[in-house]
Image (cartoon, rainbow, N blue to C red; front, top):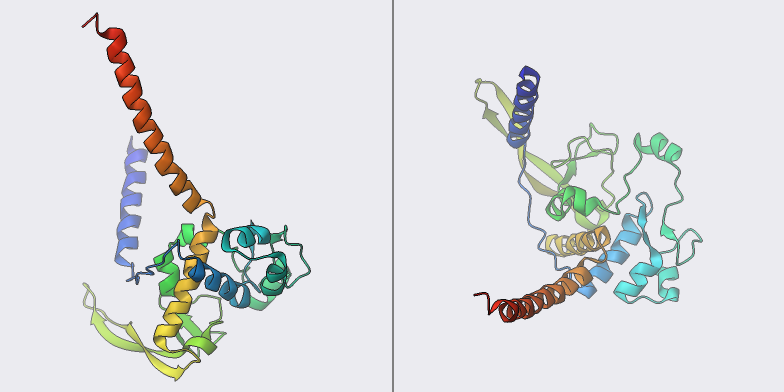
Length: 245
């Protein structure tokens, strides 16, 4: 019994610590039924993410079928490794090369929206800041000391952290980042960059469960059928049991 109480206590403590270290997440406000947004996000993913991050649970032709790309478009927009349109979306970079370059293997992004959440991804991709102490010269307020370089810096530009000094419950002062300010402009304005990231997150959400919208649509008809079937069964039950009652 003592062992169970100890385990529960540790879980409660870890949950409390995690809650204290949470950060504010901006709302992505994606629209999963906006096909044009999904198409823009898919191309954005192919151009900026697909060099390092695989999506090995997705096939090229599934994107074509769902988002309206023919084979020629798939080959010109998404396929850079000589793969076939029916192949899984894998990358040419080997894990050994990734470890040598980044110190870690970039994760597969097939279901990242389901593991992290769309708000987390949206905030993360907008929260890089200049940090000369890091190997790639940038850090991230959402994912501290992340190994990933800011591959979108040309679009967003560079940001500088804004610091403030706070005093914790034990009376110890420490410096914390309270915000990010523009340092060097990028090719896109802030609104344009946020919109581009939103399209990318929308696509990642779709890729995490491509059949979701079809499933939700089918589910409505299934529920309607069950409702009508319940009425028929109820009327049939009344007819069979009318003499008993």
